[in-house]
Image (tube, rainbow, N blue to C red; front, side, top):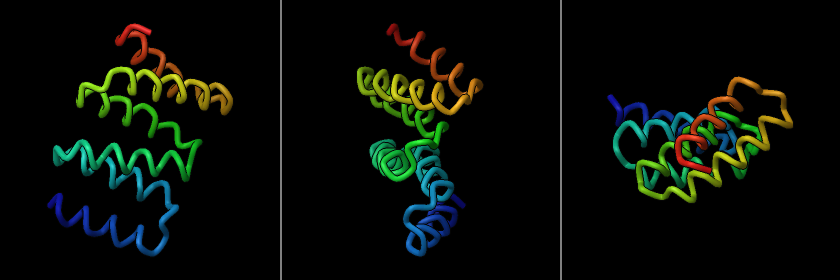
Length: 105
């Protein structure tokens, strides 16, 4: 099933590479399948193309944590806090602050 979802999302991105929703979905599928390095690359692409995609900061930070890349995760959370502060997304901002706090700022 994961393979099928991956193929659908890849097909969507071939047609519209900047589609943030599809890119986020693809990154999350890679997380679910355990391919964390590829997930991080997809999150990086998502945030490069869609820097306001708030959930991407939180979930990519969590993925970086799973890889043991704690300083990279802290940076991702910090950037997400900046983005969500500017956009007024208090819910995601709170999640990012909590995640950063758990890592020790």
